[in-house]
Image (cartoon, rainbow, N blue to C red):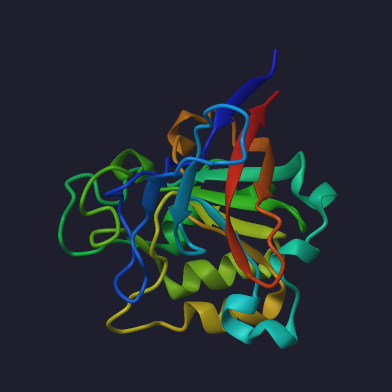
Length: 226
């Protein structure tokens, strides 16, 4: 029997967010609708593209005129995608203020690292998804080392993601995204429950909102273990 694991983080008021000018998520009840036949119950939302778990194209780095946007991604390519989940173990189990790297050694020692095929999705489990509702989810996030990212890119994946929100060192960038942006690889923003995956090779379905004119939208993502 297949096991379905929802790896989508929840979106709610007061949740973690990137620093300004990124706006916080806001949700408000919809006012009465005078032309509706009876009462209706809806909400309006304020949020930015990288809210919660999201899918992003290289347009985030290259500019929209130089690459494809999110509505142009073929949904067939995002459904039941072959995926390898690399469990690198808890990277910052003590929630240290000093951000800890996912290194190349972590990647190479993770079960399934030798099973990655060209065109796979690759998700890194640093056991950080459990911090989703913690105030330090972004500030103390693990990051990925430059040699680890180089190794992953050389595998020619279709998509890269993980359960931590900040892949680069903001104060002293390593050049992670300079490597990443020209390869046509999709990036999936932080997820949860990757530590519940028991097999490295699984199927991934990730469905972004189909909004025209943007490189990135929130998405729903699930893993299926056969």
